[in-house]
Each structure stands twice: as structure tokens, then as C-alpha cells.
Amino acid sequence: MSAAVPHVTVPHVPVQAGSAPRTGGSAPAGQDRARAEHHRADRPRADRSRSEHPRADRPERVTVAVYAADPVLRVGVIQQLRSRPEVDLLADADAERAHASLVVVDGVDDDVAALLDQLRYNTATRTGLVVGTLGPGALQRVIECGVVAVLRRAEADQDRLLHLVLAMANGEGVLPGDLLGKLLTHVGGLQRSALDPRGLSLLTTREADMLRLVSEGMDTAEIARTTAYSERTVKNVLHEVMTRLQLRNRAHAVGYALRNGLI
Image 1 (spheres, rainbow, N blue to C red):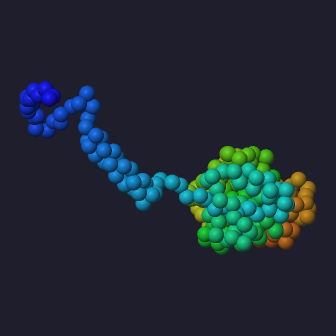
Image 2: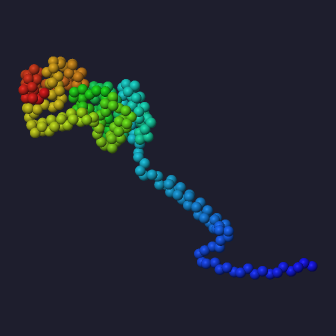
């Protein structure tokens, strides 16, 4: 016959409201499971929030079209810009929808001016010129054709090209410092012309440039090559000067301009 097991009474320990009994210093398994479920429930909501609300400050890429008769010049500019995440280079078929159009040339002639003039009528794009050299009067000519930014090809590294493109996309203009000075001088001449409507004592920048070349002994063909205008344009400009100032010939026009400090 086995011995009787004595009955042991465990004293009741009251539990305060809002607290949980502790066993060995750790939270009960039920509480751990509740916390884990809570964290798992939060994570999908956060992920959904990020996917449903994309970043509003992410910049739009600037679409760019590159025009160049010389394939070497074209490839050089494209290679400079291809790796930049801010730029989206367009194929020729999509060039008309570019935010910025880059025309890359050695110099400005009638063909280049015709291309620039054609781009001016595309209101979706703004035109920049990357050029080797700008002869006398060429800056005025390209601005008349709608160019808003100019960069010399010798200075056209990746950073300057990107700055040019982004500035055009933002509605800004870009000119080298010396060209900006020439432009301001030209604008000042236009203002003086407005104050003297008859134009008897003033010449435009283009007229002064051409008369200065005449004074150096250049003929029509040489002036055309130097200024990147056609021979017909040179003749028309000089004829307009002589007609407006009532001068007999080119020599008379040069003498008049020298006497009045116009060249």
C-alpha cells in the first residue's frame, strides 16, 4: 500500500491591471506572437504606401536631338551625353519631340542657317549651337534664327554640354562671356537706332562689320566667306547702307563711316 501524497496549497498572487505575469523575466508566448503579427501587418502597408505614392521630386529626363552633317561631330556629342541620367537621346525619327535640339557644326553658313530657321518653327524644342568658330555677324545671324544657347566646340566637355541642355530645357539662355558682350553691344545699337528712326548716323552691327571688311580691301566673295553670309546678302546689306545714307559707292560709304566713327 503506497503512502499518501500530502496536499500542498499554492498561495494566490494578485496581478495588477495592465501588467502580465512574468516567467523567468520573459514575456508570455502569446504576447510575443501578438507583437510579431503586429509588425508583419505594418510592413505591407508601408510597402504599399511607397508603391502607390511615387516620389514627386524625381526630375523628368530632358529629351535631346543632335544634328550634325559631320558624323564624327555627331558621335562625339552623343557619346558625351549618353551616360548622363538627366538626358534621353532621341533617334532621328523622334527628333521633332525633343525638348532641346543641339546643332553641331564647324561654322555657320547658309545650310546651317536654313536648319536653324527650320528648327525655330518647332515650338516643342529650343535650339542650341555647338560651333567651331563664329565669324563677324554670325552671332546675330544665329540668334535671328532662334538659337538660345551657344557653346564653342573646343569647350564642349560633358559637364558644359549637360549644363547647356538643362539650361535650355529650363527656358534659359547660355552664351560665352565675350559673345554676350557683343550681343549687348548689338542691342545697344538697336536702341540707338530706335532713337534715330531715320538711321542717318547709325549702322547695325552687321553693316559696320561689312564696311570694316570693305575698308580692309576685301571684295564681295571674301566678305561672304568671312561673315558666313551669301554673296547676295553681302551685296544687299551694302546697297542698303549706301541707299539709306545717300552714298555713291562702297568707298564713299567707308569714308563716311570712318569720319563719323561708325567703324
